[in-house]
Image (cartoon, rainbow, N blue to C red):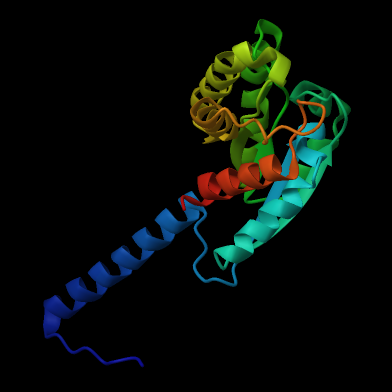
Length: 219
């Protein structure tokens, strides 16, 4: 219900200006963090990656997790076997998708990127994705993955390289790999890994989806 507010003379003008500024500020903050105004607001996410993304349909799991929080999430996926973010960029399709669809978030992943070559690609191509996202009104996010179980000693390299890449572009970091390592180190339970001990089990993908949703939406 709207109420009529009567304030004499100049005080009335100042009061209405203050209300207007406060409302504009609130909207600006909501746009910056992409927190939906209503539970039925639509959040759009593009996932760009490889088999660590498409195994168990991680984007679909993210949509399901959103429903738990009352958030409507629509996802699209561009993921091919053994692809790095440089491969997607060189193909040219990802630029078209980001430019034309103007997603709220673009989540990029390659893997595992614990070594110098992977780090170099993250740091070289991340800014290209970030610039394109800014032009389209999207936020870039890095989906931190994990090494194969046989290369578990390289886990800190994965964590450091993804963290540095996200920080270098002031992008969102979805620290899935960090959460995995903390859980494995604490419990000696490696059930987040699937049968090949590299790709995620369904449990691992569900944890990844939970971390991604909370990271993107500040939950």
